[in-house]
Image (cartoon, rainbow, N blue to C red; front, side, top):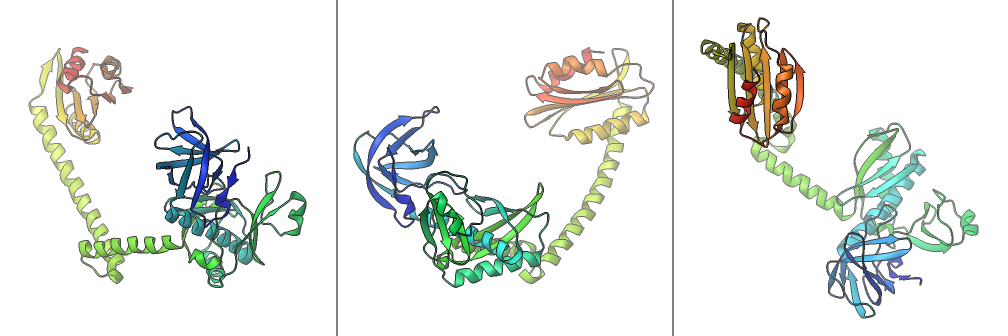
Length: 397
C-alpha cells in the first residue's frame, strides 16, 4: 500500500492518520507504519523529523525498503486513528539548511564552476564536498556573496514531479539515480535539482548563509557552513565565548589575539624552566636512591611503587640511575588511573636479563609490553595491587 506523504508539503506539521502496522525491529524498538504521514524520514543528506504521534514521542523516522517506520518511545495500538504533529522548529531549521545548501552549491557552480559531490546536514553545521583540490578565501567569498544575493532577492522555490522523459527539459545540476516519477526542487533561472527534502517557498526564508571554514578531505575540499537561524545562534555562542575570554585574559576584544600569544610565549618559557627543574630533581632523586641501593637475590636492585606518576618520568629516572650506577637493576611500577604501568632498566655491568622477566608479570594484569634485556616497559589492568605485582617481578630474579 502506498503511503501518502504529507511531508512533501513542507509547511504541514499536523495531521490525522491511521496506524496500519505496529511492530518491533531486531533491536526491540517499537515502530509504527501509518496510512499517511507528515514525518520526513532520514535521507538525501537530511535528518528525520521528530515530534508526537498519538501521545507517543517519535524518536526516529527511516525509510526501510519503501516502508516509512516511525520509531516510538512506547507502543501504540494497530488500527486506531491518531493525531500527529512534528517538531516545527526542527523542521523549519532543516528547511533553511537544506535550501541553503542548494543555493550555495548552485552559487559555486555559477560563480566558479565547482561541483558539489556530497552533502551532510548535522545538528550544528552543514558540509558540502566540492570536487576541487583546493579553495581560496577569495573564491569562497565570491560564492557566499552570490548565495546571499539570491536569498535577498526572495526568489521562489518550487517543487514539481516529472517523468524520466521530461528530465531533459530542465538543466539539472546532477542526474537523479532513481526510477519512476522524480521530484524536482527549482529556483527558476538558478538551480534545478532532483530532491525529496523539505524546503521553504522562498529563498528569503533561508535567512542567510555563512561559510565557516574548509579543509582538504581525500582528493577534494570539505566546506563547513550554516544557514538561517543557526547564524544567530552561532554568533551568540562566539560572542559569549569571546566575552568570557576578555575577562579571563584581561584584554579587550581587539587585543585578544596579541594577549593570548603573549600568554602562550610565557607558558612555553615556564615549561622550559619547569623541565630544567624536573631534570635537577630527578638527578637528586637518583642520587638518593643509589645511596640506598639494596642487594636483592644477589643483585644490586632498586624497586619502587608509585601512585599517579607518569611513566615517561619514571623512564627518565631509571635512565638517570643506571647512568650513575652501571651495575644496578631498576624496577618501577605505577598505578595511573585504571592502569598499572611498569618500567625496568639495568646498567651495563648488570648480568640479569629483563626481557624474559617481564612476560609472566604482564600476564598477571592482562598486560602488553616488552623490550630488550637492558630495558622493558608495559602496562595492563589493575587486577592485583602494585605492591603484589612488584613482589612477583622481584621473584623473577
